[in-house]
Length: 228
Image (cartoon, rainbow, N blue to C red; front, side, top):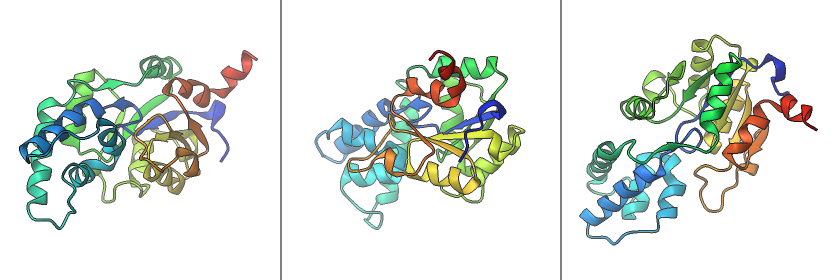
């Protein structure tokens, strides 16, 4: 798909693993859950790479159980409680993202968030970090979460832009699928929470950001070319 270029009016970000590095909040919550279940600490990187898959996936890897196991939901709720207690304590914007958001504001390019993270955790996290996106779409706000395109379509309406005037960035295959189904230009965040054996280059995104610092050049390629 053609890059919006000069017609770019909005950028929509996935949250965990794309806009904000939240893994350092999740890791101690998962380790505490394991401790309460008489299990030793697990490798932090394994937790980090699974954050984008949500609480169910984290419980599965934390306790090595499936969703049909007895007390699975009780364990998931306990994990969410532990996460809520630490939410935002260690989370931070990825390198270069604060400057990027300021540049978007300076260029009058609206920005928003489309995430599968429930609103009860998303809004406190954004407040903790002092972020004020023009649109925040959570699974609570739509009938079908990503990879369905509804979140992105709603985000574009709230940002008052056309689908082809916006770019979506995400660190999971479901993000790129949602963007493609909506008809948006997509950028895969290879610096995010990618599981072992997976590759952001295999998702079919229009572009791939190896580092968060690369996002400016991918969003505004005409400026990068001006320096060449």
